[in-house]
Length: 154
Image (cartoon, rainbow, N blue to C red; front, side, top):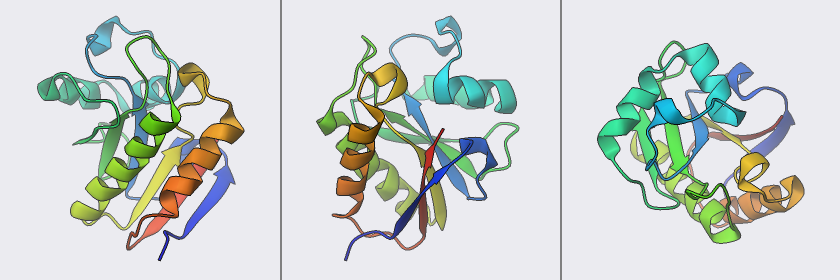
């Protein structure tokens, strides 16, 4: 049985879910050296830097790895950060697929009942938005999850 999901257009931070996903990098560059842009930039501007300070404790992330931090000043139970972008600012179908699988597994393991994803790998990842969305939906169709899954187009 595949995951039931919906695709919506809007702002990731306007979603009424328990946890959101941040399209992150491999965590090898200190967060404070990075210019805020994309999903991470929105999270930093509205939620503060606390989630990114927590990320420091994880050290380098494998591509596709998912880790959970607090949500800072945002009204969520947490933020799942996925290493969906390489150190050189690119992504791939394999990285996107693995990121979706790992984020959903983490959400399921922590008993979150709703999750919202941005379109991973598009934007600074360099993958065409429609192609990245197709990769994500294909990944979701091979998984199970007891909750609401939303993909948010910005």
